[in-house]
Image 1 (tube, one colour):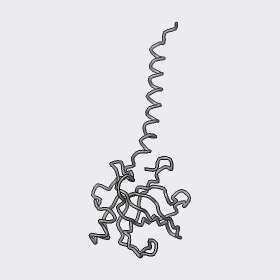
Image 2 (tube, rainbow, N blue to C red):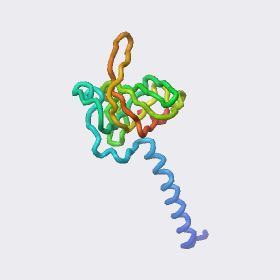
Image 3 (cartoon, rainbow, N blue to C red):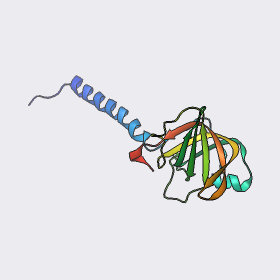
Image 4 (tube, rainbow, N blue to C red):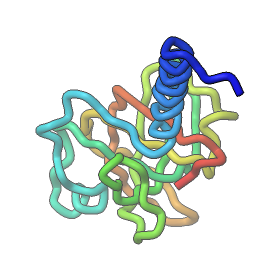
Amino acid sequence: MKSSTWAERTLVARLRFTALSLLIPLLAGCTAVRFEGVEGRIQLSPDQVMASGFEQGGTVVWGGRILAVDNFEDGTELQILAFPLSGGNVPNTGKSSEGRFVAYFQGFLEPVDYAAGRYVSLAGELQGVVEGQVGESKVRFPLVQTSRIHLWPKDKNP
């Protein structure tokens, strides 16, 4: 039986460490997303924003299920059913929804990727309210000018 040398054992240890170093971020990427520069964000849900009359100014971090996507010449609008976010900014679909909001992203988002039923988390600035319709009811939604958006993988939907 051949015993391994110190150099061989060191090489094996380094390879294991490298493999783990590459694997951990991949696994962590499926369970959390971080948004930089949102420390002073508004801690209100879309329903609370509408009830309080606080409609403009300030950063929010919200997420939820995409209900509709519309592309325009200068950007994309997502209508989203909000859910509370976990510590990793993952929409918690096990809890009650927190109302709807509209996220506007300056630029094109592929509607096949950002399709109804997919989940997102995002950061952006409150820009007022927009009129919308749910069935036959006319409603108002908070509007978020989205600066950062994370689309959750299909197989990892919260």
